Length: 500
Image (cartoon, rainbow, N blue to C red):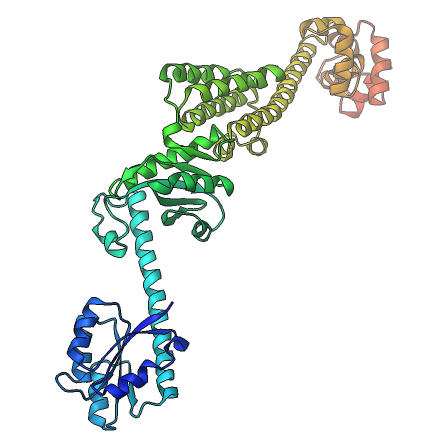
């Protein structure tokens, strides 16, 4: 960018000489030149000027007086003074008036060029600071209004930052979700008034209504997921536009194929149908884990297809998903109560899954995958719990009736299993067949009885289910390694004669 410079010198010859100076080489354009400082001051009041180059000693109003007036009325204008009088008083007064540079006459082109270079650097840096300060102020203004941090609707401070932001212009507000640097990217789009980041991956873009259609086409070309508000007049309604745009962009969950969704295109909600769908979600939640795999997937698809058709907001769909998640968790607790906390922590987190899904299709697929895993755990745990229960019942029955002539068929009937299946199952879970377990159980009890006072081997054999004492002795010696009588003697029963 070029800066504007004004030359003031009461000597016409000096002015003519400066008109041919190569201003462009230093980034300046000679806007005007005067031999009268008062006329020059009036010109400054109605024209853009960045630097005034003036002689110190002029009739009517000196260069120092001109600098003092400019410092009060136009403080952004830089003043460079030159004079043929190398006197300390002039330089001292020039500093007091905050003159940017002081150049001695006769003016040396190189010295003037250095002063202009310094002025150009200063002006560029000031413009840069001003731009970012203004941008920061606008960002704060928009962020405060959009996020409802302030309730007043006054827009005068923003209009002061940029007169283009008027209260009579029509705007649309766009909410864009992207990880890209949208502030840089939108510089290629038409009609963008403001682009502000609100939170991670969420941007708000203010666009003039006249350019709204072209901007939506631009969003489509760049594959940016966006929501677009209706038209609003002025900035007082910017918060309302933001709420519309955010609701529109959230509809992407229901309509993932649509990159840009306009608020005006969102259908109304069928509240009665939605209520029925939520009731159905509650019913489904209680049984979905135990359903057939195919029926489970079909039920999930039907529920969410109905919700997409009836609901006007993805929040309704997420509510149904949370109802399902709660029901699945409840079913899991009820059917697999023996699971430890560590085992439960390894199962899919349905609630996080609902939050993370970016589309209904993804939500349904994740739900189905998670329920498949949970169903396998439930089936395994239920099977194990059922096995453990049957085993405990079988062992309890044996313990209650071991002294009787109970058969494998008797125990199998008690636990409601076919004898052949019970035989295979019992050996699998206990590591030995039924007869061996019954025999060992009888002998273990016999060992306790043999140590009781006044107890004979014959009586013990009968009490543990052996009708033939001789056979009992053979089995006892096979299991324990010694005869029942010797077992008694080894354990302190010297009151009895050893029985063979």
